[in-house]
Amino acid sequence: MPHFQIKLLEGKSEKEKQELTDEVVKVAQKILGNGNESFSVAIEEYSLHEWKNKVYPDEIMANEERLYKKPGYKM
Image (cartoon, rainbow, N blue to C red; front, side):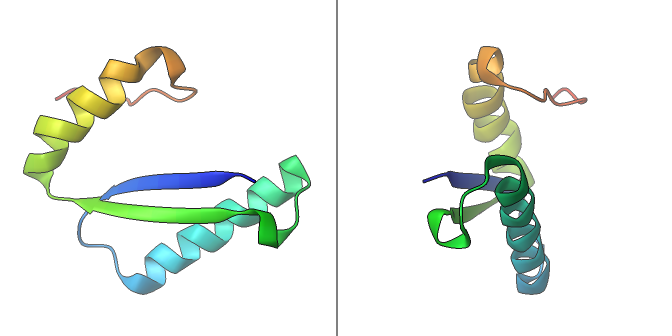
């Protein structure tokens, strides 16, 4: 029962968020083989200030050893 939690900078439209959700599930289904009903996706939006002061240091870099794709930027 995969669950994806996506964190984004605020400003994306509902259409963009839904398209992202659909594509994430589609690729996950292809790779993992689970049916559509097995997946859930949550999207959280943050301001640039929140990203810089909370998300980047506390949720990304503090968990660097678990990252399969590290950011190509520094804050």
